[in-house]
Image (tube, rainbow over the protein chains, first blue to last red):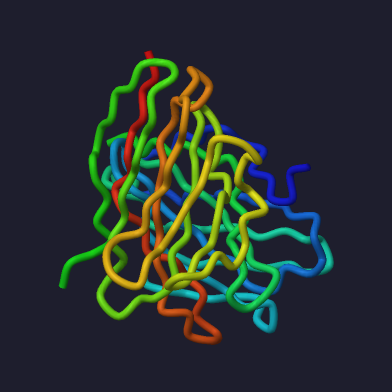
Length: 112
Length: 115
């Protein structure tokens, strides 16, 4: 039962262009959403988050959009840089203090 | 300002042996989570602990796996009688659990290989 789905296993983008990573969820009780970035042989590092009371959160080159009616969120990276190449995980939480449920990840490759 | 510390980074065990994975949370964090990542998959929740308490173990296999977070010392994930299917990356995360900020801070993981 995949409650959080990242349907694109990989994405390739040219340096300087926008990267858009997508995530869908099924559990309507989720109220907090996060994106993590992971390099090989390292643990995931927090990137950006959004609460269900918002529909957009921005931090520098990274913006997360939340569409609650569609149960969809996306991460925009602009401009994309080669150092952004990593695996990106979408995660969601249904309750304060509860566990995070992760998607399977999307491999982003930014070509220079 | 040390992050979440996990050791060992790599652990090789033969089938039937025991594996012990250790995790020290970030300073000031009293909540620890264990996740497992199988090849080509995302992170799967295993267990959530506070000091001396297991809060949620809904992701733990019913047999051979146990976890603890004692009053003193690191959290331990113990796998008894390991099998090849236990080979995976095991990540520990900690949180200060501040309401409205539920992000977890992850360690670098322990890569368990079962021969």
